[in-house]
Image 1 (cartoon, helix red, strand yellow):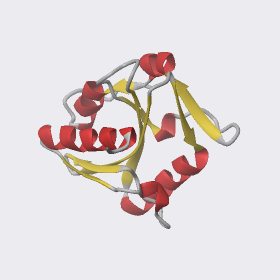
Image 2: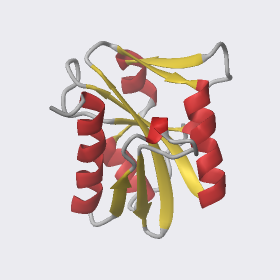
Image 3: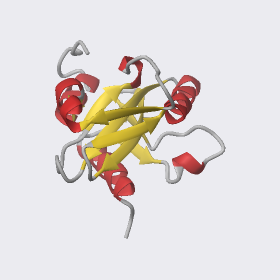
Image 4: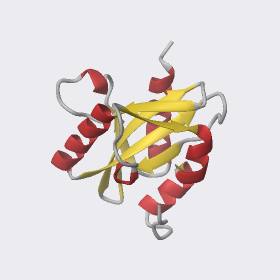
Length: 141
């Protein structure tokens, strides 16, 4: 049985294709010797790189190293770096999106987000797709 994170990555790729965009998953992205995102998508000719995390609890943790590697990849590929969070037990079916540039100042070795915070300050899937597709103007974050 695939890991929960793999399932969410595949689900995100499926959603992108269903919405008319191209997307690929990079299996084992964390094990590569070169920076690579979990999912890479092209929406209206613009590349988006996603670091995807999922949890059954109410908190997701990203390491700053993961975020730095995502940024390095995005610099090389002219892509926009985003974090995606899925709280599989507490908010089933929902994906939350945060532009990496909008993260708070770096403190410690990790960045964590709780479900309550994600609901307040991260974008939902529909809002992300509307903004990325140009269907609505960008929201201030």
